[in-house]
Image (cartoon, rainbow, N blue to C red; front, side):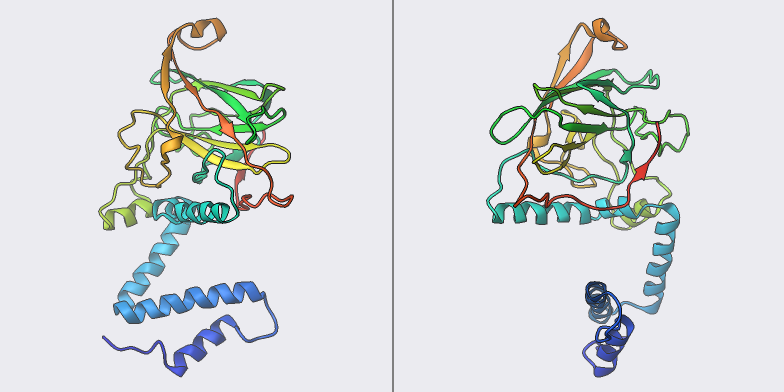
Length: 311
């Protein structure tokens, strides 16, 4: 079509009317954001000569994305969640916060309500013949290096099929399998006794993989373990580490890898003495450093819909 109409009075008036930009009623912030996003879309249609067929293909794609429940997965896959982290990193640097364990994306698969235990939690509820035993442990400290007592460490990860409990399409996992929460003692230490996870891929027939296919991108993640860590007087940390040696560490479709978040995996023996499924096991030490509140507030809390379940 190769015509340019975005700057015309008719289109600019349409944008204002569609968002009620100048009206007295409504949410001013919402109107401002929707006006900007809609204007950017209109301009992109002009600049790229996007056809009506392409527009409706996009609308139908959004319908499928909602039906598949994959909006949060897509947000990770197109780098949106990583971009939010980049902005938060830059905001921290601007106010002089450069220490602490690095943040990285939360992903879409957290479930609130995991049982909280003191110091140590065994979270391999279900047998998994394909997964070997793993112990994850560390110390939670402040920037001064002193251990933080009473810190809450939440952990969740996939099984050997790449599925998370509560989201497993096979329906075979128990509630809160491979999910747990630990309160640190006076020494700031935590420990999870679990099984080695593997990475996962986007559902092959889902909306996210459909878009990735069109971009000639894969939808796979390396093996990883997620964490929330909270403590009074400190900012909540949202992070995850990758399993050392996974071939996709630097080819993660969700862009979550950070150099500081690839802890060493150590081979150990003696797991039978404390209840692991085998004597030989893998050990990962992952120490966490939390940063203090900013003027008494936690400026890195992210409010978003999250699943929850009862034990």
